[in-house]
Length: 212
Image (cartoon, rainbow, N blue to C red; front, side, top):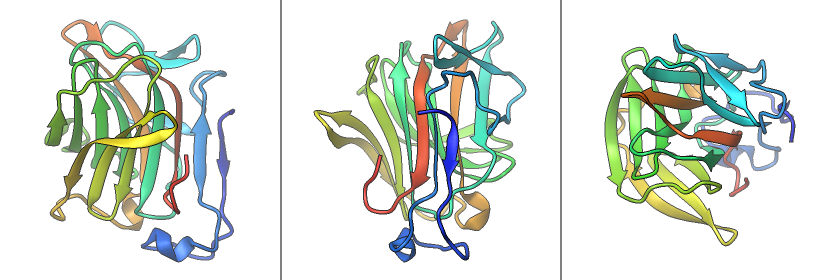
């Protein structure tokens, strides 16, 4: 699937995905075949790149490479999905949801070779508060997703065609929510001279039922 946006026939911003039951969900997706799509906007100082169709770290400087789609989803309930490639050590590849337009605050699922975490980014997107952790790491070729339903945040992996929850967190209301916090994104890291893996594909959509 090439980069693109599917727009629903909606007339207003809604707080709950259940109110959009009669509409198609808004959906963004890319397989990075043509590079980083212009709709993914860089929000970090450092840039990512695409090699062999995989979104990965560019350069040799430690730090984050953060990108968000240039328009928000319609609901607070979201599903963000990616196909993991070459995870490394403890350096995480990230799927982002519930971001503001500046990408100062967001909720994310991080997956490395050795662990998985759900965390909240804040402080211009550069500080992290870990909300839940697991020693279950990711494997090359696995599909992972961040599923956000109200205050429930889930990190899920596809297994035999079924989505299995590996890690979850029930938020106490500290994560911003509402129309200004519906952007979604993707992120890779370099830390102590080690690159995270990458994402072979990425997609995000409003959660109406259990798509993707």
